[in-house]
Image 1: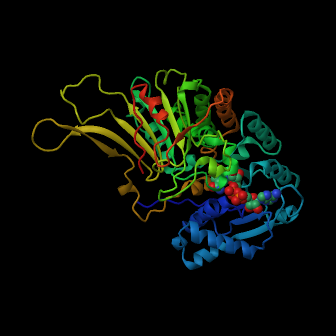
Image 2: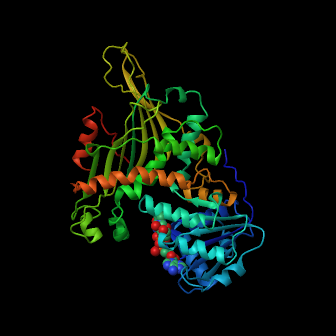
Image 3: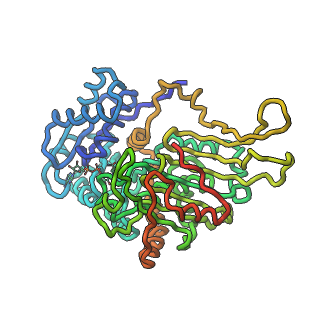
Length: 488
Ligand code: NAD
């Protein structure tokens, strides 16, 4: 079955920070792929806007190289690639000054969707919002896309919301979390709310606990200075893991509509319980001078030998409502772990009684929602081991993505950025965070961070290529449970 592509309306997209790393690795390749898939109208305009001096030709060469490196240049024919590059233009602009703004305003088309992508440091979001507004570029069909991080804590997030709200309605603001753009995240909603099978079991009576793991093999890379002021809690838990938790735990919305979905997510965040100090484990990776990816320690990478910032965090939390009372949620994320793996495991309770006697080889059901790599959903079920010789039981994964049937190798499924950018153009905010959601997430996060700062908590060292600090194992083992393995 081929994927169906519904073209979006003609649009102008301005990428502030159009020469930056995100534009190069994600935004331009994503636009190119949607163009090749036939989703982007032929007269769409993409305008790079950044501080460095370039002309349109140079920007096309930049985009060409980005596509060569980070996309499949063969996604289009040679003529298609040229046609895409011809959609590109460039303006040298200073977010904090007046240079370039009049030129940008001249390049925009009247009466069509306008999207301004803020792919610059968050310190410039306010300046951009203000200038877009003061140069008269805001129309009814205007949207802004705001990258993470959205604030550093609750006061800064509030301030940022206030700044944006001075120039744009909430319905025009698209706060991006690329985890929400993943095929499997949407499939999770389809599986939960499109079937009778799961929803009756989706509560503390049948679910023993839930694990959310986002493991990375990379270190902090070139982001050391930023990361050391942030840490895993701010960089990953407050946004990505929180969003996944919301989608797993939320009540069924009345309809699949942006505000109905986001209202339910907000209720989950507001119902999150206090996290006790002994339910948090923070870690920092150690050096691995001899491994295949030889590297220094976290403290070397950020250039701060006394850093107490965590590159790993595991915590146990709970949701104070009827559905989830008694079901713990275990969250963990970290860098330099044994495999790159983002997965949610819904661990069901065991059967109340065994009729088979010795049940070695079987376990309780597990629904695994895997976001990367190899996106997919599997349900671990018990069956009889085929063959003669009595009733031997085994666990087998039931693949619920049906990828073989629904996604043949040549199917062109959009990745997260592709899907989200097209949603911006279509004006669909379902997969974007609303301002109150972000603030509620910080309101839960801030006291946790303040708590460990007041305790002078020192992160536990962990080996690169491991599953994290030993204390994280103990965190779950104390409850007579085990983490699922971190596997690629
Ligand atoms: P970058 O440093 O590579 O690029 C910054 C861009 O902003 C450049 O194009 C630069 O010319 C432009 N810029 C800087 N100052 C300017 C000014 N005064 N006026 C106009 N343009 C100016 O940054 P990046 O990695 O591309 O990140 C951009 C944003 O996306 C940041 O908010 C970052 O946190 C976020 N983000 C990046 C990634 C990533 O993978 N790179 C992932 C998630 C979020």
